[in-house]
Length: 155
Length: 311
Ligand SMILES: [Zn+2]
Image (cartoon, chains in turn orange, red):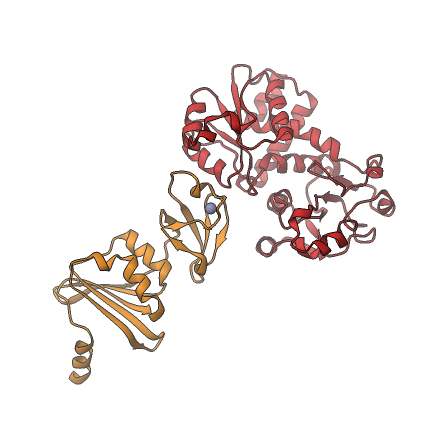
């Protein structure tokens, strides 16, 4: 038993305070890294790539010391990589753990793919309604065009 | 303050649609009223549409409103790069209501969120054109005596035709059976068929347009089949003479059938249909005046009771 725990600890160094983002699909890991701007951060960061996962086959994992994600960052994350699990660590303990869910509205996060949409021609925020959380289908509040996950461009 | 703008027909409940039809009927009895005597109506046409603008301006004039605005966007500062927001805020200082046509989709929705006065969407790109839908509904209601349980045939360009899409949205309350009659390249998009399923709207699809196809129709709604919509010009050459309504096709149709068309037509309705009592497209355009009078009054907070009392 203690053997297994030791193995885990070898894989990922523990952090005292901060955030663990787990169950990131392997092919989305680097999108998440750039989305959160980790390259520019001076915090201690551990990035795990190609870990084994029962659900995903291969997964990614990120630990960021002394960083707690804002709602805006969580919403962005939910679009890139749905079903990821976020844990908040305080004093080496997991004090909160939950699935990152898509919100029902995305404000100022996604660019509309319709070039004739008012949001691409006026200094204003975009707004999307999430039509289907599971399949990540969103609809522009302004031009009413729907977008699928593979079309979504984050601002 | 409650925003009384009209941006999309989807915002209207069944009750609201029926209420607006009653209002239009009052204006048909007498279109010349003093209801908007102290009001200024702005018509801002960022994209020219003479037909729609004349209809709205006549509606306003017959209610004694003053009309300001522009019909040619080249003459305005938006062509010098002024934002829509700045134009709307400036005009809101002068007008009580803004009727707006714009080439960008979602422009009316955005304007309604920032303007202190109500916005009436007179068309935003390929998106919505609710006053057209209201005049279509009024025409159907007037000629059939009801909106309930009708067989409505939509013919022609069902892929890009925004009027037919809005008509489906508006008719969802009234248990229609739709027939989509279109060449393969212009058939009804999947998203509207899903919409029909979601709201349990019955529909059938046809790829041929013959006398037999249309014999059960109560309403035949024709649209333009435009050459530039085709990627395959061979296909266009094949269908351009097939999707034309001719008087000879009307012999076996229902006596109550009426033929609608949002106008302008190109060649999809043969001129020999004009003499048929089933042709209704000119009256349909005339109905636009009453529908738009109702819309202007409603967004300005004037009720059906007040309209009935005023005459
Ligand atoms: Zn849009």
